[in-house]
Length: 258
Ligand code: SAH
Image (cartoon, helix red, strand yellow):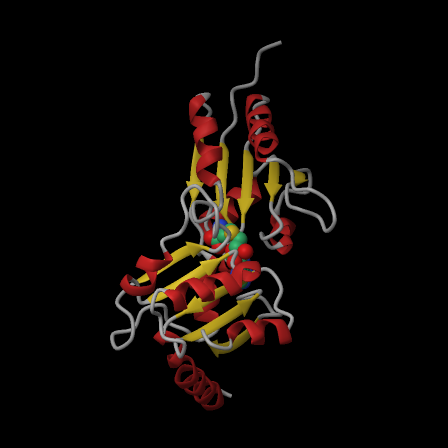
């Protein structure tokens, strides 16, 4: 029997949560895929656009159990591609922003398996916008950084909170919920004002989005009392102050249309 030609792997960003925020290109890849390996953060609604005979493989962490190890995900992508299948690897946000998409692409590249990266709206951009927070603003912020909060103490390459506290105007911290006290402590230690505004955006862009506003001084207390849960982003910086004005303007616009 003739060996099937190698399939292509599409490493696709699903966008920040709202299924409508996916790109047209990503949607086309989903509609054509033979196999879809998807994460917890990729909206399940998007799977409804898959072919009815597509094989759907869940790779995320189910409550109380382990996530599929990265090595096994890589191997599964390789195996399906070598069977001649077109595979979509569907990830929340953008595949290259804290998404391990590069690890998967490198594995495929090392074996000569064709792949394509389809970028997505990363959750910091999507969630901030949906919460009425511009990550840059001519009066408040000329720079922003996406930072992981999950590497704090004792890591080989710790995050340079000392530099971030001074050199970047808006900080968008991913995976930071459980590290909120130490992130706050680091920023205060390195001279960030306790009055710096902070927003916590939970399940950004989805119908159950929640936004909690505070300052570096009180944000941890607020997170505990509102029982903040994952996925959530921490946005730190003066731009958070624009929110009230923007939301007010948005409400007026809706009232005019309505
Ligand atoms: N590749 C993804 C990030 C994966 S890391 C992207 O580009 O968005 C996972 C972290 O992303 C979560 O811990 C959380 O901090 C953030 N996140 C993802 N989706 C989110 C959402 N809808 N609302 C708030 N934070 C989100």
